[in-house]
Amino acid sequence: MIAGRAKCDIIPAYIYTKGYKVKLFRSVKVIFGEPIKFEELGLNKNTMEEYENAAKIVWERICSLAPDSGDSKK
Image 1: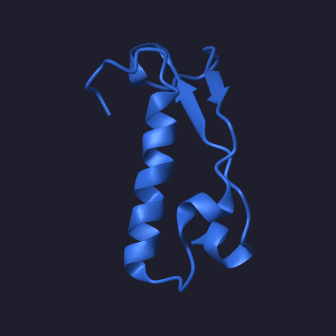
Image 2: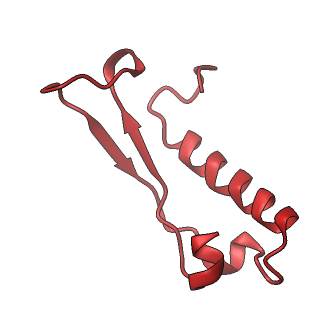
């Protein structure tokens, strides 16, 4: 919704941790993807359906950044 209102691009980020758990003082790897252009999101009328479709696009891009993207854990 923020991208829809601000009409801005989104930079997808994947936060990778060992065992999918964040622990204090442990290293965390953040992987940034290519920006998703606002036009790709299809947010013209800012309807709930458009937001849901945009969320799917963003989620797919984030999941594709996973080092083990073949893993079914999401």
